[in-house]
Length: 104
Image (cartoon, rainbow, N blue to C red):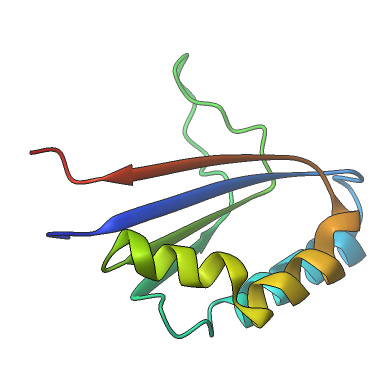
């Protein structure tokens, strides 16, 4: 992933047992993947791995690859992203974001 901007978001649900909330957030993330500046996307759930260094307490992870930091900035204010926040924010209790660029 040469010259990439990585945007990795972890979501914890208000109601982790709610299938409706899970479906709402998953549907929202799938729609969010249509933002045109996203080069690649991965929607994940915790793997069944179990080691001391692994935090599997989140409900969903959202990994986006952008070509440039500017493409990621466009994504942040894109109407699809803003609609996602508006329609899905009631489902999560916590969001953690890790952004990274290639080490030089």
